[in-house]
Image (cartoon, rainbow, N blue to C red; front, side, top):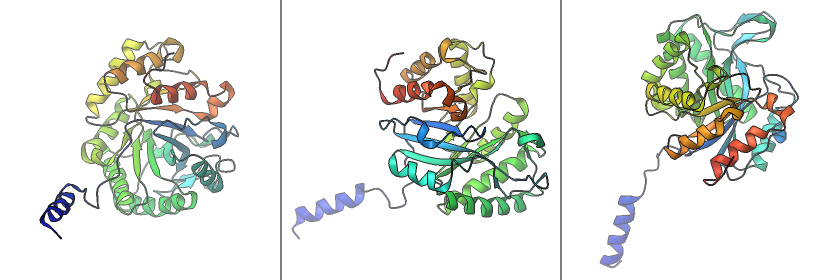
Length: 306
């Protein structure tokens, strides 16, 4: 080999990325919670824009709860979403038909049927993490899922325990290649924020998205207030990919008719818009998924108008 060839090879080696480079997180993502209300909604019912970089369905929910015994199970997760319509074969089909689709599972949620609130109540950090890793690995492999979302909203544990349980779980699942993304779904409540910010402080580097529930604010929220809330939460979850959000039943937050998409356009102009998520496909079905269509059009087109 001549000297020029040797130099070229050496340069290629020097500039080539290492083989263990982390998976690149998309610049923008659209996410949709699905299956919590058992409205017979299917993945294929939801419009999926092929020009959106990634589209995430979040199955809602997996809960460490035993419905027959009506007791919490210390990290042993069971399916509490509409698994008849959102089955392993349905997951496989939607991912095959749409190359930009990923499917995750949301853990926890607000309540479980008529059994009341879903509580985060581990017996110990070690036992909960061990049970959760084992049960979720089985569930994720069965359904061919890509990630997890943390949506606990009620707690019978201190912030330190929550941070260590969830943080260690995410670290183990990522390290073993069981999941490729993880997100959290806090909202502006003192107890909720104390727990999630403790988690963020220690394990934020492992969390890919913050699905902040901006629809938990009052439904009289204005564009100015929404952007103020967005920037305030971005400062708390520093360096996090905070997603804008709406509830498709118009139950709270900045409603589309009051300027949600206008606010998103402003955030994009300021390079703050990492994506949008909607709660939920179950509610959107009756409205023809019009908000999903608008959100994805915004994310894929810099010239989209409303």
